[in-house]
Length: 441
Image 1 (cartoon, rainbow, N blue to C red):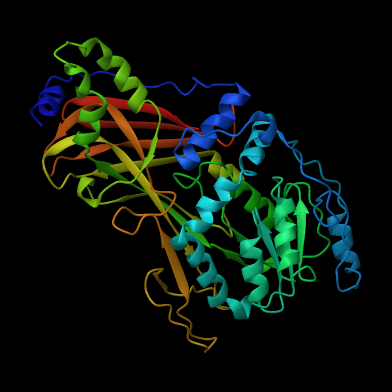
Image 2 (cartoon, helix red, strand yellow; image 1 turned 90 degrees about the vertical axis):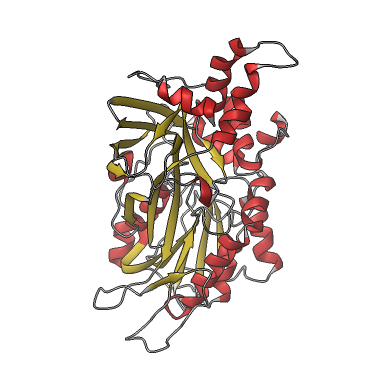
């Protein structure tokens, strides 16, 4: 602890930053980096596996016009609406790399094995089954088709399952094996390209990435909402909130940096600057213990999925004022998120939110419902595959009990790759001003 204290005491008013322009444009490294973020291992897929093309399927194409499965012809006004000329932006090579990453079974296995995540969605779908029964649903980014099947089990009349990666082929087989092919129609394509000739009542999507907005999949949900969702339609999840706190983790600093003070009696402190860069340059996805949290949480951004716009997501700025509860070395900033599955009443009011780990209370009186669920990734709750995201400072800063740490956080969609996120944190501690820049990629 004394080493961290001395480091903090000797700190000068110095600008420490990692520029957001330090991108690796190599496609191979991009895919390998994404794989590392997912399973935490060094096991990489072969290039042949990543570049494998999906086979053709009768229902797995998002590039043909669709008629309603029940045979009825959409109304003329709908037909006119859906035949308006559209020029969706083409997929970039980063999009293609992302879709290849999403074709890996490891990605889907990890998500499905996250029982907190999967059961939250299942509970939300069945809790809102009277709003899904007999309705038309779009599943944005359906993956293996699990959420689409939950919707079919809840009584949906039709489910359009849209998946841009080649795992759409397996999703179609899963749907067929469970005898839902008359209800669920699988599209292999982007939401921007798929054609559906009817409005939908419900949108379901598991779009959240690390630090909530990483991967930029919420944009696809917004596109689906603007193209197909009926006025007042249901979106699951309905709301999302990103939080931030200060954290202290001297053990992590000691293991990554102080280790180099002496190795087998040899002074290797010359390695320490490089060790700091390698360990703390990029955001770290890890579990944060509740005991590492120094402050109460700060709400960075809360969104309503029925009204949020793509432009709103391109740049998010939040001013914060945080007060440490104890004297400790400040090592960085931790982020996590909540999402709510909450319908709206006919009068515009919302259902009361309850924790996903609590027993769901359903009141079948449609004028009074207590049916909202919350899926949280907070440190004090059971862990999910999202864990928490930590932005580490290069050196610890000793902060005092009740000292005011004031600053601003800016999250920007990267101009290099819209699925990346540029992060800048500026704050003051005592008489010193600090800046940390990083890229979540």
